Amino acid sequence: MRATITGLWVAAAGVALGAMPNAALSDMPAGIAFVQAPEMGLGVATGSDMTRTIDAARETCMASGALETDCLVSAWCQPAGWSIDLFVMHQEGLHWHEFICGLPDQAMAERVADLLCESSGRPWIMDCMLVQIYDDAGTPRLE
Image (cartoon, rainbow, N blue to C red; front, top):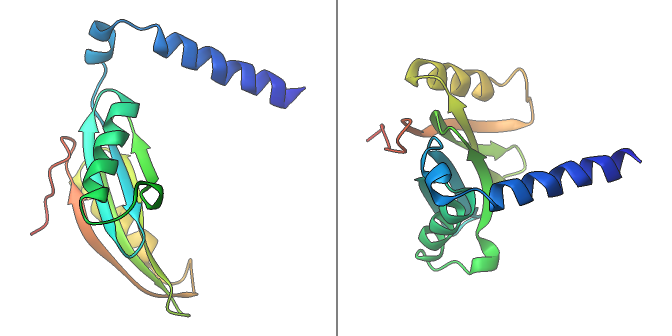
């Protein structure tokens, strides 16, 4: 019963958003999408429409040579806020990127990165480092 009710809420939200006029969508705050193809590419895009923004990030990911099916959505936040991209490596050698978005400012983004990379919480992590910080407009802030 609970799954059915949740499904109805999700369906109702989708219908409501689909019925929103374009003017209402343009009034929404910008969101940010992170799409990655492991070992191949990354796409980052901002915009007020989730589907279009994810599609734009996927196009950037595919420009690196990755297939569309390889470019998977890793994160979406609306409003975008400040975001971080962390490189994380497991002690067995597997590695990946983690994205956290929707943070209030750069100082908080840096603190969250420090906390997530602290080894005491995840002792199986061999390496973790902040790769990039994005401001609330999606602009990379690290050189």
